[in-house]
Image 1: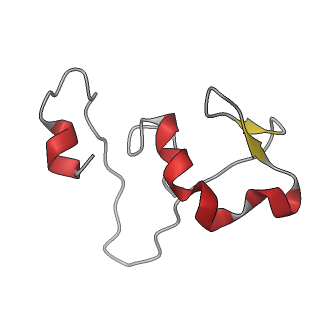
Image 2 (image 1 turned 90 degrees about the horizontal axis):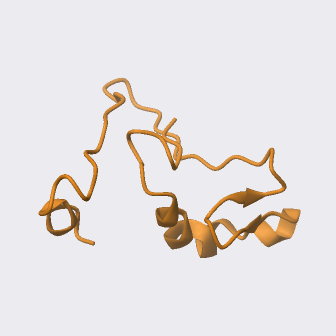
Length: 73
């Protein structure tokens, strides 16, 4: 499971890209201006079910200037 705000998906603002696909308003979940889910106990994640799936970390965008180019942002 990869969750926004953790090493594999460090940028909380990336949740906004998936927001229209999830339609969270159907279950009364909203995204704050700080990209936090409301109500507070809500969680979003990308689930990967594959025998070769593994956890990984993405380096800090500020510390890695060409990261945006490599990930297509």
